[in-house]
Every structure is written in C-alpha cells, then in structure tokens.
Length: 368
Image (cartoon, rainbow, N blue to C red; front, side, top):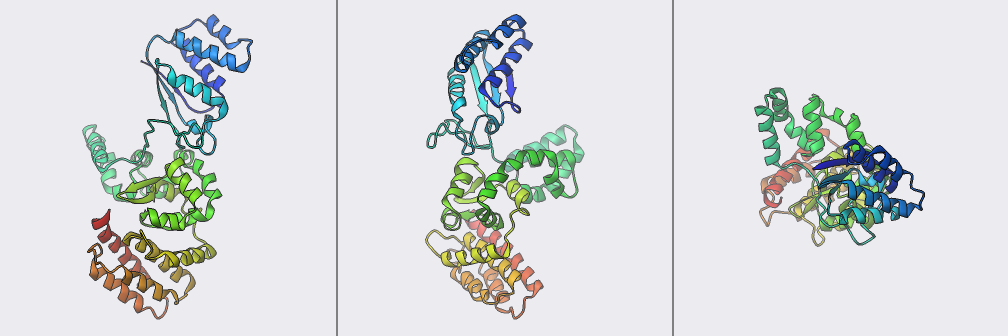
C-alpha cells in the first residue's frame, strides 16, 4: 500500500493535489511529461482540481493510505468547519474507494455548524495498561535507563501532563530531572500554542477553569463557565477528558497555560462570589465542593478576608458524608483547622490544603 503523508505548508486544495502528484512521479506511476502536462492545465480552478484528481485516481495502482495531518492548519476555520474551497475536494477524496484516508486535527471536523464528520476518533491519553506495556517494551528492548526513569517519574508526569503520548515520549527521550522544562521545548510549543487564541478569547473562563485542581460535574461546569466556552472545549477542541461523569481539561494543556492564565485578585473575587451562589444547588457533587473550598482557601490566603471562614466551614458541613463518600474524620479535621483561624497562619493554610488533597482521594474512591 502506498502511503502519502501530507502536513505542513499546504494552504489550498491545488497545493494538496500537487503534492500527491509529486508522490506519483517519485513512485514512477507517471512520467515527468505527463505530470508536467497535468500541472499546467489552462482551465478554471474548479476544473483543474477535478482533472488533477481524476488523473491521480487513474494512476494509483492500488489502495493508498492518504494522511492529511494538521487539518486545522490547512482546511478548517476557527470552529472546525471545512472552508468552502476545501469542502468539495475532501468529499471527493472520501468518496474515492482507492483511498484509505486519515485526517488529523486539534479541532473536531465539521461540514457546517451542525454536521460533524462521521467516524471521529478522539486521541486522548494512554491507559495505565498501555503505559505498563510501554514499560515492558523498554525493558525488553534493553532501554534500562528509560524504563527506570519512567518508573521514577511517572507520578509526576501524570500529575502535570497526564498520560499524554507527547509528554510520555519526550519525558523518556530527554529524561530531565525537572519535568517542567518540558513545557519550554519546541515540540510542546508547536503542539500547544494553537490553543492560545481560544483561551484569550475566553480569558476569564479560562482562568476559572485552570484554577480548579479537581474534576467537576456537568452542573458545576454549566454554572461557572460560559456556554460558548464549554461548547468550544467540549465539542470543538475536545480538550476535556471525562472521568465517570466528571470533566477535567487535559493536564498537558492546563500545565502549559496555567501561569499565563492565573486568577488575578479581581477575577478571584468574582469567582468567589459566583461559587457562593451555586454551592449545594442541583447536580453539585462532593468533588465540586472540594473545588469550591480550594478557591475559598486561595481567596483567604490572598485577601486576609476572614469573612470567608463561615462559608468555608458551612460548605464542608453541607457535605457531611451521608453517602459515605467522604471520610468523616477528614471533614472533622479540616473543619477544626478552619475554625481555629484567628490570623492568617501559613502552616494552617498548608494543612488545610493538604487535607483537601486527602479528601479528594477519599471522594475519588467512592465517586471516580
């Protein structure tokens, strides 16, 4: 099977077909004279494209794997919809039986506002089993240093980058002691900078989102984030992973942009006010409460506003473990810590945050 992989530096349908023609000439499926003739057709653009495609299909001798990589850079608009000049060619390629076509994109492909492509496979993260298989392959291939590094750093990799294929591959290859150096390498920038304009357009939503340390429910998300931002994240960018009914942005995206979209004081105050109005509303889960509490602690630390203590304690009391999801002793420990605040005590704040992490582990065992 002939494989044709097309990625960067293609901006028009004619350039795409010209690239395929080059591959046909390289593989001796047509003479240079024939290629030159089809290149220089004196016809309107639509007819030239049709004639080139007909010639390509005629000269390919068997099944051909055609990979159009980074479709968002060549054929889609900002919503993932195919540009009008590309729609006809993509349809024609998909209808030709000689091609087996793979389209890759960081934006889910749509024909129009409502019609998405069929057979879309979302490439997310490795599973634990796949990481285990990778480790065994490293050991069998006598890549002992790489396997040992993966064993040592996997908890940190998962915390900051998730089990994303790019982060795993570059971490093993480069084996930095400080994993955060990874976000500065060219491969990360090339892959992730694409998202920046979307986040800038929804800057306040992005700050809210990246400030949350734990997954959140659909109800929580709909109350704190704008509908347009949710639509982009869930349905266009496919930037959320779903964990048993809760959502979270892929860690590799969150870590890369976290410092760029930190909560400033005014945004933090607005977020606190918003959270105070939604705690305990329909669909609100114990993990949502932990997210809210984390923001309240951050607000407490940033503003020295002791008026938030009551809301913090009441939030915990509201989620007393009737469903046995949260360990009562952890709830009690954090409530006592918070009630003892007379001044802003950094040690007690650190203890409270650590207890939040323990609570999340406790909740996670029952919910996630």
